[in-house]
Amino acid sequence: MLKNVTRTMGQLSKSLRLMVGMPEYSTYVDHMKMAHPDQSIMSYEEFFRERQEARYGSKGRLNRCC
Image (cartoon, rainbow, N blue to C red; front, side, top):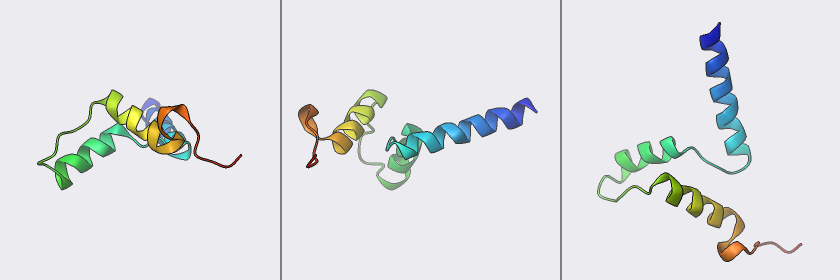
């Protein structure tokens, strides 16, 4: 029972992050290790900052008309 609840909460957490545009760091690390083994992997902080800048624009400015 506890195992099912834990798994469900993990899946829900992952879904919510994707809904707001925040991909999983572990997925990024796995991808980099498999597809780009010659490149360095960003730390979690660098990854989070890069994803926020990609979504909202650099230097805190929003890239939208309204």
